[in-house]
Length: 86
Image 1 (cartoon, rainbow, N blue to C red):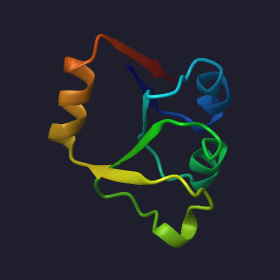
Image 2: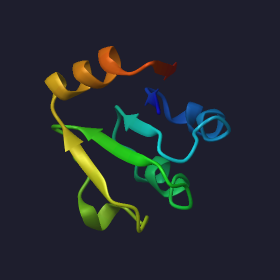
Image 3: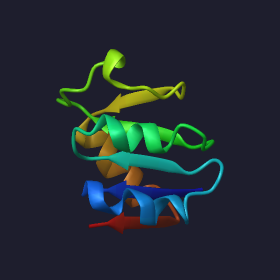
Image 4: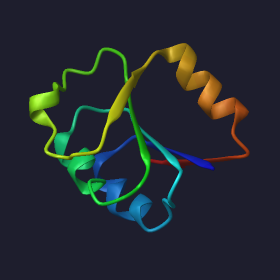
């Protein structure tokens, strides 16, 4: 399992090419389009706490979770593969 940190909306398309089934994608900015781009992927989507996105803003059928900064640290330090996009 890889963790993909998407820090800029312009990087979502690049990340899609490498995100595999079972990977975790952490989106660090408020962009419902980024989540919609992941709609057909079998990845775990995580948003940082404090996101202004609401469930109604997200057109994807995929589930997502809200993570704390502490969770973000755990994801980025415990995974064998962390890929930062932007």
